[in-house]
Image 1 (tube, rainbow, N blue to C red):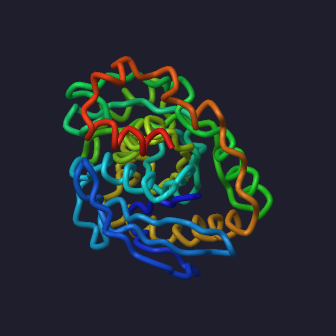
Image 2 (cartoon, rainbow, N blue to C red):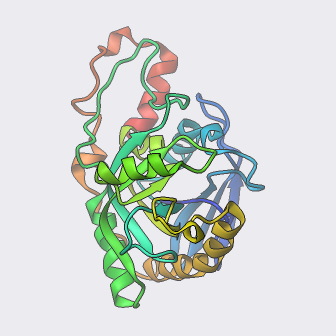
Length: 281
């Protein structure tokens, strides 16, 4: 089943026939919002608002573990996220869409970044952190319907909530990053631990602050005004995607825990076995 995680400004899906709402408490706490179950174009989907239905959660306050676990427990095997991003390259203009294929974690350790720890050890491979099948599906559909989209870019995730300094922006550019945001880490890595195929549609809102022209260093109100204008483009792309068959799920992602768990089964508590069984589905 496909799940959608809505970022800033996305608190529901246009054209979705709602079939249920689940307040899915998890072993890791409550998710950001209830999970909405529904159908679009005869496809069953799940929807969750990353920042809460009233956008009350800062990026570092989001319970990413609960969000991913709730979606997995309800049957999600593929996730597409929607996120606001800043552009670190001139070719990625404000209003453009971009799909990351790589991630650079520049958060500060404030976020619970793994399901594992506290008596259970596992190490999943994230050399290729996203689903190439989902990424190609999104990029191919965008090309077909004439939406400008940049694929195979690197997303730098920063802690926030403040917007970055020019020095930080230049540093991220020098590391080879193309876009910057505040929410995809640890979301992308938790999805891999949950054996869920994951991809993000990033909406470029501005040029961050690396350009010399101060006029390009926009304020948050201007950023989100442009973002709202671009949301329609992303929603049209999603609607077009959902009118086509979903791509196959990569076996290496759906079996990511097969060789990752180091703690023997007999050493796990019944509680640990229960939530691990959900991740293994």
